Length: 147
Image 1: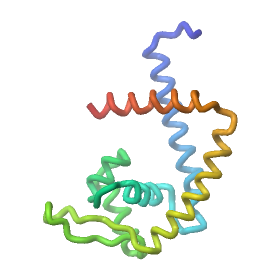
Image 2 (image 1 turned 90 degrees about the vertical axis):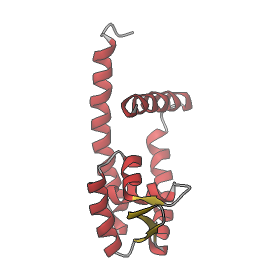
Image 3 (image 1 turned 135 degrees about the vertical axis):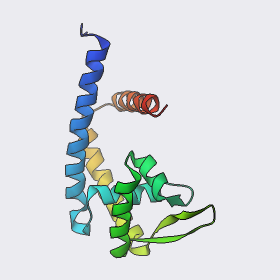
């Protein structure tokens, strides 16, 4: 067991999360390159695909932990590329609903299959309980920060 104070260990965890986040973006860029996407654009597709309801740019931003402005820039480019469409939102004049085109859905499904193999490879030497513990801790930290 470590004798370091909990706050120091927490700081080490945060620094490792930053490092892993950067590495995940690099790997995400590699996974998506053949489809003309980046990890950031893939995240937007995922936020839309995984939502049970129509989503707006601010909602995508909250889901991704990104600013509305950063998401809006990507959504605008992705719309020009034929991946997204914007439709009227009866609940808000300016915050339009963002939807994936058929082309984007097809790309997302192909990436999803690719991602499963990637995830299997990276998690092969970890137990299910280790993965569940890591997920529990990260969700707790996210909840604390969001509170």
